[in-house]
View 1 (tube, rainbow, N blue to C red):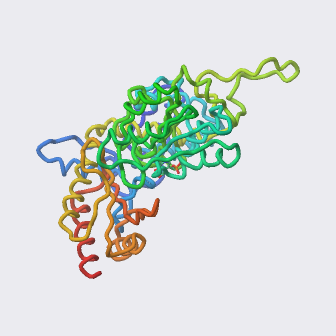
View 2 (view 1 turned 60 degrees about the horizontal axis):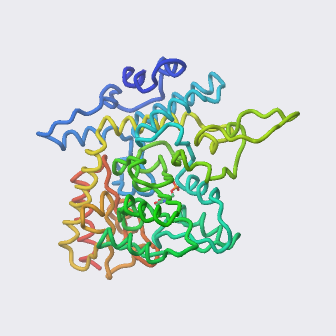
View 3 (view 1 turned 180 degrees about the vertical axis):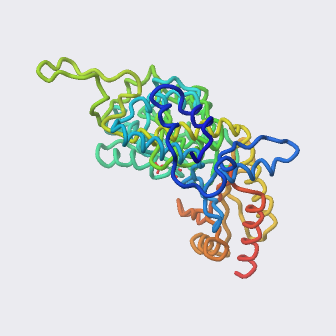
Length: 431
Ligand SMILES: Cc1ncc(COP(=O)(O)O)c(C=O)c1O
């Protein structure tokens, strides 16, 4: 078989999942043992370690990928898990409830959460929608979030404004002071404020929001506090109870390195009854005898928000992605991404006309660096970097920022960052 059997068995656990380990996988180029061997940290040669990490990602060498904030690559181990689990489910012709149950335990532990408080969704947007549609609000109730919110975080509320007359209020994120963000939210709160939402790390410019402080403010005003964690899970270690929020949604297919169409929604157990499931089906409630239905009782825990037949292989592969990160070391991953972003920052600061929009305070930034230049529109700059230098960044058009975003993650290298700095320098010299 084309992957490390021990790793695979360990990740699958016992029981039905163990069956997977006896299956051969699809073709992988190169020595399978080498490709799947977990790197061993050596403080004397960290770059050798990170090179070995890079080998775990089957990404094309034809371009350099700096857009994990948009979509992250999955390591081979995760793709292997997806393939084998999927094939086994097809062979058994089973839905894979056992896979869901095991994945829930693993992923909940990754977030420091109780298993019952977490459910699997298809992406952060879906998790945000479950909260935004589930909270009982009436016309003129107010919701506050940042003006840099991604459509996956803002549209669910704007839709309720459109259909039900709730009022959306936005604040511009403060890139200079973390406390400034708390103050800007506080300035918008009225007697009608019911919900405060922030992106844990904002998508356009990578500002880390002070969630525990915002949580205190929300509690003082009896507001629901929801965090859109699409940019934080997998970039920095996230302990959900410590964040202080009532609910948190994230994607698995960005920084965590899970398969496409995976995500997680967490709702604090004692508050779950406030988020009414608007979409339900099999598994949202105990079986009902339609001859004598009785009261409709939701399933225990966040399980109630999952319904119908789902891709259990993808969920199991997401759990594998969290194990992969744990084995590399989550603090180590966060520090690496941050150090690479700092390296890009230091290089860009030497280039005339480049303005960096991401805060420099290490408490307010991590593995995203967003910049702009008056010399060129963001789309043109993005195209140059991609077409002429094979550097895949992300154009930032939100709220007229006219910028380009760079995401640096565990598979990126120092050389790639230096290539980006050199490319920008060349482009702007010619502009
Ligand atoms: C803060 C934030 N929320 C939500 C999303 C949407 O993610 P998805 O498409 O996985 O739901 C993104 C995507 O970049 C994001 O940055």
